[in-house]
Length: 375
Image (cartoon, rainbow, N blue to C red; front, side, top):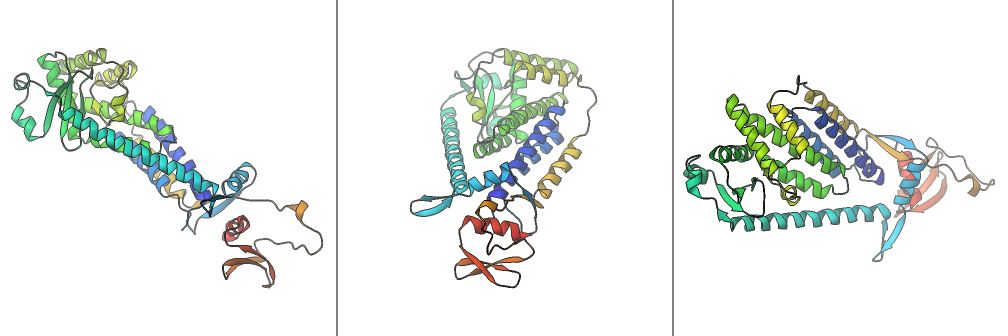
């Protein structure tokens, strides 16, 4: 088991394919219920794991490619000197991506912590307005902390351990207050805040792949749809109508607040007008017959993930004919040569064990020969 430029490039390709499959799956699911949401998250985790473990198994089958792919790999494997040590170009690229990811993670965690501290200093929502709707004692027991802020225009929830529900500084009717609380508390019960937090962390790690931001948006929408359907399944027709009116009212008061998604928050109205229409349509049962596509997609994604470790695309280089002298030249192939390691260097031998030439341990030629002789 090893990590090479070939395994890293293939890992990037496979993760992109998995993300693309996930986007198609999410778009085809008119009603993303709990099962569909779990399937989408599972595909996202497979993509993350493929990037996290870009290994080349010794048993994998090498598929050789010439042309552009070989030229790219050759460029990536070129040696550069840094602080007196020799590195390959792709090492520097991988290190740069890792450093940026680390900075983004640290920045997100610091901003998340400072946001929670800022929220903890906000004014508490008047308990006399909450008491007729839900017992304040129950809220405190479940660690639901209700606050008010003039910095937001839509209600939202945040927090993994200490749970904050934040209302904008505007007046809501008793019914609207009831449904907003139901919505945000349902998010906490289902662990949606943890999902939001983890997807934001993965976005920091995969910052170089813009597809994952699209995936994050689709997961966020799926979370809101699931929360809507779970709540309205317990309501009467009249109550469901009131809930939908609350959705419309909240979105009408929404302003542009791009920072909310980056803070792993949930929000009743964190959606566009088109997405709101889709949510209302789903609640009105106008989405048609629901198809069970999650099993097929889960199996497909799992097979892509597993089979990707069974093959490995490697570069194949043609012999530099113009540089070969006719006298003393030998026709070597994978069947009549061997590469052995002796005293800190590699020696190339013919089929009879006769010495042909030697190479330094870290030379580009040795790395290319190791790939070719592997299978």
